[in-house]
Each structure stands twice: as C-alpha cells, then as structure tokens.
Amino acid sequence: MAETNGKTLTAPYVPYKTFIATLDSFANFLPDRIDTSIWASYSGGMRSQLLSAYKFLGLIGDDGKPKPELKKLADEKEHRGTLLREILKRSYVDLLKLDLSKATPSSFDEELRKYNVEGDTRRKASAFFLAATKAAGIPLSPLLTVRGSMSATRGKSTVARKPKDESGNQGNTPAPPKVFSNVPVKTITLENGITLTLTASADVFAMTKPDRLWVLSILDMLDKYEEEHLEEEGANDDEEVEVA
Image (cartoon, rainbow, N blue to C red; front, side, top):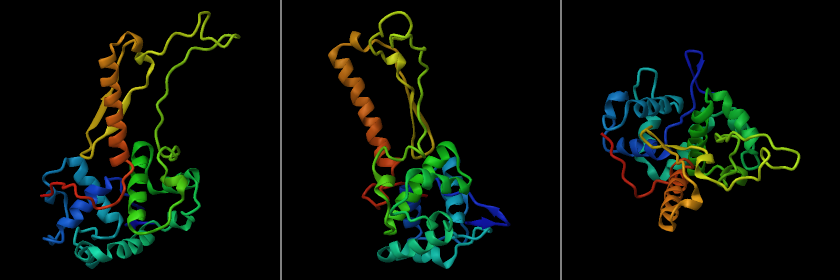
C-alpha cells in the first residue's frame, strides 16, 4: 500500500481522463517540480486531486520532483499499458492481491476502503482504479465492469415512505399516482469538481407531453454523462482537455 512518512496515502479519485490529459502534456514539457501551480486551468480541488494521484502512484517524490518512471509513462505511449501495470501493482498491493477477474463488488469495496476513501470519494477512486486497470490490461470481473453492478461503491438515494397498512396501501387511502416530488434528488459531479443537482416537484400526469419528453431527455443526458465520466473507460479518446 502506498505510504509516505509512515502514513497511508489516499487512492487517486481524480477523473482518469483528466489524469491522462496531464500525463500527455508532460511528453511536451516536464517541469523540474510537480506542484499545483502548473495546472492553472483547473479548480483548486482538482489540482490537489491530481497532485495526490501522482504521489500515490510514486511518479513524484515528496518534494514534487519527477521520477524517471513519470517521463517514460508520458513519452512511451505505445508501452504505457505495460508501464502502468507495474505501477499499479506497486501502488495497490493489497487490492491487487484479489483475483480481480473473479472479484465481487463487495470484496472489491472491502479492500478499496483501506486506501482512505469513503462515500463519494470511494466511488470516484473505484472509477479511477477500474479505468487504470483496463488501460493496463489487467483482467476484471464482469461484476465490476457492468454498469449498475458496482452498488457497493455507489451512493444510493433514498425516499422517505409512509408505513403501509395491512392492506398494503400507504395510510388508509389508495396509493397516489407517482409524482416528481417523490423522486430522489439527482446529483452528479462534473470533471472540475462542481456538483450539479436536479430536482422537481410536479404531478407527472399533469405535465404536457412536450414537457414530459423534455424532462426525460434531461434525465437521459445525466445518465449518459455519468456513464461516460464516472465509469471511466480509461481509453485516451479524442476529447481534448485544456492543460496549462
């Protein structure tokens, strides 16, 4: 497990594509010290996450000076998978003791908790690790990669419900039609750390058809964003990320 000065480091929970974008930038120019000032285009929180990730993976020292592995990882894209695999084995020693090709979400989550990650941070750390292992060619259990299967690392929204009577209805009246006011608040975290929350209070049956379709299209867009960003594919796609 990655440590510095006897303390266990926090597993990376920065978006994997953001990490790769900064890594690619080092192929053009590698500073003599890696610190938060080199990523001026990112938010303060994102800069801290990036710096923490580089330290955890052993790519920079406590003083911020790049290690030879960082230069190789940035320059040798054709060998990046092999290099990354060795870095992950060194950094996630306990987690990689699992047979990830057969691991369940609960066993994976149990080991991931040992890396100082909880709640939403643990979910993001899971996304980073799974994307990195995929890029490194490490076999993963389908239980860890199928969308929606990582219930152990995802937060769940809950809705307060009235107790049911003996007939199965809530209260003494028939169950009312579903309304948007009883739907959980939907919150997602964007790549720069900003959170976006969507909620509504309206009777779905009272909405016009165009309004219903419009609301559903928004929900579809949020689901698509989460699928593309929170369940990182790990591939270095064509999307450009601005790096200072």
